[in-house]
Length: 301
Image (cartoon, rainbow, N blue to C red; front, side, top):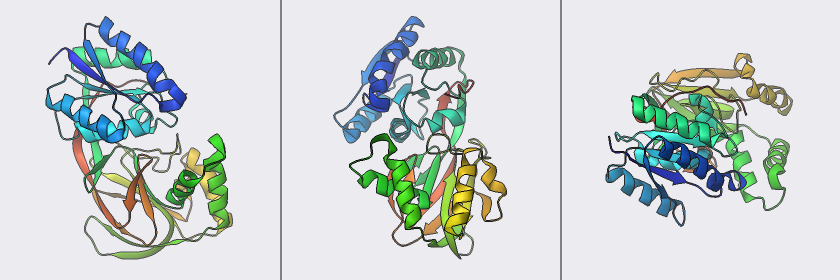
């Protein structure tokens, strides 16, 4: 293994925490004897190109510094390769890091964990989802939750509350989605549902346990379907998502599958919080698709 590793940094993550977090993470890695180079990029496409170049050149690890969007970008560079991924989670949601039990908003601890894992060979192979040419690590969302994302992304006001406001607006306009769904290549089911969430990991939206029992190395997705329900029922069910207790509600069903095809009109899918594109799509769980450095206790921050 080469002693040169690559920090993949989003300077705007978490209102500037990305740039600040790179320094203690880099210091921890250098203190452990590693040579550290930093990859930024003028935009997402340029950053991904540079990250892929580092992987192709044989970097010892790609250490992503930022939030879930940055982790998603890093996955596109390392998935299917032998290059391990390190996680320095300093964004807003940090769902990928939480699912792995990694330090959250503690870049020095995350840097030390990555360095120790590189030295000891503590690398964990985890599954990823793949839809078309996109990899995802946490949850693929479609339906009510993705419509909230759509509306929130369009809003130019509301500040940090804009997604709460978007949720209220979507509740006012709430209507079920007519899905065509096939599990593991089986027969097509026509269902009316509030949302369908495809979980490689357990959470999205900064800790909402939509696929609460999902395991990242079992070779399967947990697919959570919130069925057709009234606005009143949705208001009762949705707060339970933060504890994962919604899974016991009669309107909710869970399926464990290795692949899923979804079709619906006017629905955009989001994976790891990033827009994936309009349905239809097919997502497949790819076992052991990425190597992740180390494990550690979740901070709960």
